[in-house]
Length: 253
Image (cartoon, rainbow, N blue to C red; front, side, top):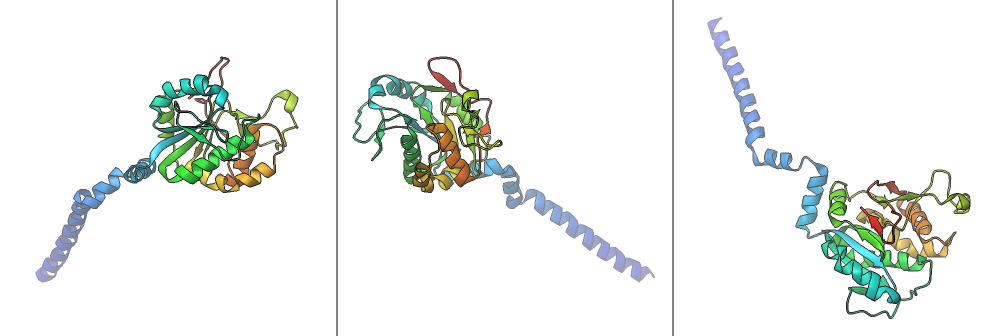
């Protein structure tokens, strides 16, 4: 009987020892520490993006030659300097400026509404900068952005998902039923600026030509929203930080 007790005691001791060792291994092993550091999916994704030299945001500002020396230059010399990424100004074919980082879009003029300019700008951003930034912003040259708040907002959102961020619109009362929108559809109003995640831009840009062939209204922001909804499957996400104010220069974020 004493021999049996000794055997049982031996195995119990062996079992408890193995359990204790396993706990210590989990607690102090490098793998466990790494797992704790990357427990937040957004932080883990952003850590990987930083390792791959991917910046936060690329801002594309639509402008025209008549505004190069006024609106565009003011944007570039104020909040444009503090963008947590990069900023480019997009204008018509054959445009030139030595004061702002300008991209002249081939086959695009300065006619209004700027539907083609807007969509071709997004295509250019996709073709040249997709793998360099997490977010992409379409902005007008009369908008004012708070880069610090913009950065704070975007760093709290997972850019790997499809996002279409801005001030939600459905048209005014006079346009009700005339925008070819279903009762549950909306768009991001262009005035305060529109932000697309890299995944959204990746899904939309290859179909820009299709969107330009199927325009239902004269509103650039409505048609951009329609294009995003059709090919990225996402509508405008309301952000209280993106709002249009009753002032000469509009403010976003």
